[in-house]
Length: 216
Image 1 (cartoon, rainbow, N blue to C red):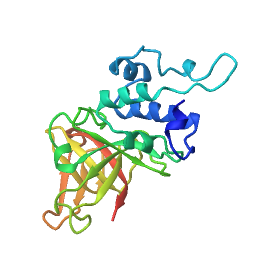
Image 2: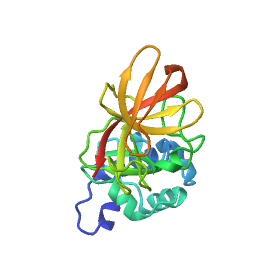
Image 3: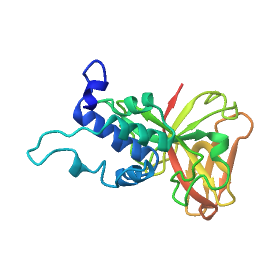
């Protein structure tokens, strides 16, 4: 039984299965896809396999978990972290400069491509479309410093004075404070001392996302 392999006995049946669910989600897979990638039967991690007909809990084998971790390149510590009861929100993460490269977002501001990693925020309540950007330089100083992490959501509402990230149609990723908006123009105020502001016609922008949180 898997529970015996977790030393202190605090790992519960639902924790282990939740860990497999989160492992699949982290890598953009269904649990069936994760099982196939690991060379297992496609139904190995399905919800129907988690309890017997008389409702007794069934545990996945340590071998099946190990094969799943090997298949996606994660280690056992990653899995234990995913099984935590207060798991928080798992979201994509990338350096700001890398996120500015082509092909990192779809037309709605959702992260795409294998360049993104994932990070979990225990106890937080960010929405499911949120993503994280790490600042690897001082281009947004003094508002944000090198090493700060921004949590950004393309699904949240925004208004004048909010700090936002936007993508232009020619592929520029910019962060700033939202200024005056009209039907013909949107003002983005710079967060740094290097530039005062930008003015865009709405037609030149692909998406706008609000900065929900920053680690400062």
